[in-house]
Image (cartoon, rainbow, N blue to C red; front, side, top):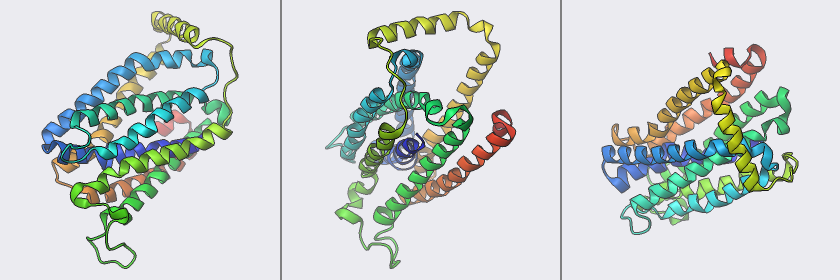
Length: 308
């Protein structure tokens, strides 16, 4: 279960935060302000779609039964879509800016669906007592995979031709051309490959929910009814309302920092790919340790005090 997070996170780290989206804003769009606005707009579209649809998926999961087939379907769609972003060329002779952003929006929506499905498998994979440990391990593995991907990118594509160190290739591997921004674009293929590999152990070894015998159409219909019932009686569950509202604000604030860190650094501070790579490596290394520290804090002082 935790290994799958190691497969998913590099998409966020490589594509959304540090490498690909900053390239889109600074090079494809060519205007940092317009680039930030465009990325923000399509992130908003993805957010609206997830807000309108993901709750129905979450409410229907227990009625649908097995999760793996749905998760496999989401990943099967995500992998080629992510890989196709390799064709987002600076001159737009491959994918146009709007097509690139549309693909990224669809992937972000599917990513949210995969998160709902993945999280629903946690208790079966680790049990209630082991959930915090598996969650912390997943965070650590996700960032560890990102560190390896970022370090490989720096060694294979960003540093060659810029340093004379003996252990660094003289030119970018595979003949990639920095003038065509191929080292930034190849992150799409790298992220897609890591995702495809990371889902395999989950599909093979993680326990799945038993079949319910309920057709998918009925499961979603009943899930919608349950969701409506929850909304009409939510005032009875004050603690849950406070938790969900505060979590929404906290996670949205955190996501805002993550999504726009690279775009802001590239556009306003004029950081290049190498600067962003090194920053990503440093922060991801710290996040690996954060995953293990978070597990320990959760286990010893409880989740609320750990969050504080």
